[in-house]
Image (cartoon, rainbow over all chains, first blue to last red; front, side, top):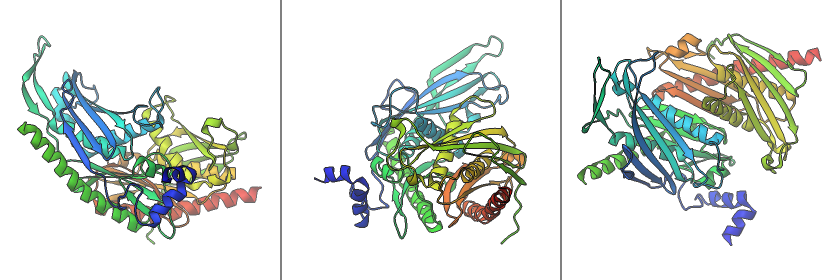
Length: 281
Length: 213
């Protein structure tokens, strides 16, 4: 019966839950979904991670390549991330070239990673002006159930943390490149950016902040995608994005920031435990 | 209120003869042209029974579409969607086209302001006007309101905010670089206070324009 009601009166159905101070999936407004991480699931990739935040599932695979650095910046390497939202993950996405939304998410994710400076691109340079590492981070969403940026960032950072670069010797005269995959050096990852998404639901007398919204909640808060994404990295913000949804008051903003900080600690523990367990195996 | 200085703004409404509303706005040396058409008929797939569909097209100076342009379109679309009273025009479409003419920093804030002026000019029903402002944190950690191009490129972080005209609450915000919580709050407060100047400018332009009619 409730399923029918949900389809006939979508906004009233949602409102009834909110009036009872609970969300349709039984969570409190501030409560986030559980995070599950699995590392090195893809053996053909140089590093990989599978992350589940509630139902949202993202797989990240990292491939390494060698290339010549740009002439303008001869001493830095490349970190390229791309997010794919295939029709597999939700009925909202159609086959064909990447949708506008996928491009926006790709842009947000790569902005957060670059802004947080968690990877010093100078570390990726092997020989100035001759040889540098290119880290291709491909993120594929398997199941889209809201807060996609959070899951993407966790997957990406976990993979980067488990990534090791093979040693490379470059002969200046013959320009010969030798890659020794036997000796690998772990990539230095400074800090640990964690993104937290929020939905802002319009309700009088004051708006409701929903932490870690599901796809259905995002829809109710004004369309696809979270309204507010706060990214916190070791005492500094590396991105606060607010798009659409209801307007944000000062006190709500303070609450979201403190929630983002709490979540950052939690996610950090999850990632560290996961990597430690992976090493034991 | 502190004495804020924004870049000199110049604007002309109804710059284009064939669109329903248009505006050309210069903030400092950055110039943007915006045109609004609608509410008009659109394809059935894009129609929404609840509100007007807003389509935003951002044309950069180079003319080549890129992922960064999609991101800009997304920001402008979300901002304008909250400003427009879309529920007045169900099953219709409103098209907003923005052409970058000159970019000397602060392009996106200028584009948002220009879009707002074009929407006002088109006569589309609006909840509130919006004002975009930017702020940057220089090497010494000092905040600079409405930075010049050189200041913005050298800055540690750039923060952009869009406020509504009624309650001055945050409509849209996006940032680049890293910054502390204190800096964020101060930047937000400063931009919020300075948004009054932008709204005063809007009022000036619109009242001047009304006199001409």
